[in-house]
Image (tube, rainbow, N blue to C red):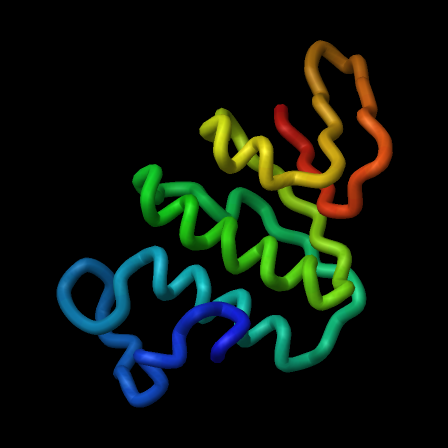
Length: 113
C-alpha cells in the first residue's frame, strides 16, 4: 500500500465509479497494487494515465516510478504525455509510420504511438 501511496485509504471501500468510493486515479493505483501482489519481474501497462487529468496522471506515474525503483521493469504505452511524465521515463521508443527510434540508457520503457 505504501508503494502505491494508498496507506491512508487502507480501510476504504472501492465503491462505484463516479459516485462513491475511490477516485479514478486511486482505482488505477489500486489496480497496480493488485498486480504487484504476484511480485512480477516485469509489468505491462496499457495507457495507465488514460482518462486522468494532469494531476491524477502525475500521481499514477509517480506510482509507476516507485515500482521501477524497486527493481521491476515496467513497460507502458502512453499517448501525448505531459513533459513531466515524459521526463520520468528511462527509455523511450516512438512508433510512428512503421518506423521505430530507440533511445538507450534507461530502464522504464515507454511506447508512444
